[in-house]
Image (tube, rainbow, N blue to C red; front, side, top):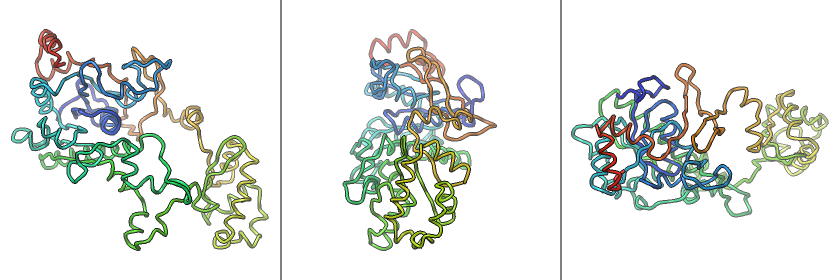
Length: 406
């Protein structure tokens, strides 16, 4: 395998080199994880404009700038950026030359695009059979929808997640953010590593497919098998913020709290509420009684929650071991004493965007920790990468830039 480009060990994946041909969210999340854990990820971007996410906000000061997009800066930490117009014959040849010097290629092209650019797994053999080629798309590389593209709301809707979210007597509720794309990217990260593990064992690479629709359908928990087994919507229906009165989201004096009281921790909840009288009330004496009197229990919980702040509820939960937590706002998360004590947040300097705060790695490996660095500027590593891997001199790059190739 390939060593890291600067010659130093930097995380558990420092022996890998990955060609990143993705844009927007799903693919870049996969390759960001690979890069933050040490892989040398070379991101190929369009000349002049770069990844479309560079045009997405938020921007510091509210002024659009391709080097200041919060989305781009977050999704592309630790990578190297080169520019290349793959629509040109020279660009395609350079792309293939880069690809055969990498352990994995990650792209988000539809099947027809991958075929046109000759970057399917079969296009590398013979000669580089050990490469892993991962595609991250809305609907996969086969099937009737394979050539379709989809924004996040479409992937969530197609995968069944929207149907499960919201109140039972209302329309399905859209999920916040780009969750369908992040789930697809996380699956692509794991699948790419699994395929690379297989390469280490067998010497053979393969094509890895991740479809956002399938990533959503795979995490429908018990709803999909319940319907498949019973052909019934008994469990497969929207429940809003409440599975029952004792499991739900309640408005507190200054926000919201989440309660998840199962029979085993019901006494702790009563202690936190200072409501010992409820233990002797026949309406709440056991779980079956509580379910029969769900509305009455809900009224008691609404009244109590409204009388305390999020902090008070959380402190009582800590004292009594009750299953209560505040519904944190983004500001709450940034100020979380727990996350700050664990060193979760990182600050990275960027030549254009300045010093910004970023969430930390999703998993910790003390022996080989993730050590993210700032996202690259557009084409920042053209001279470095093309010189190192393709043997091109700066004068060559000047000519290629004049021709619009890089």
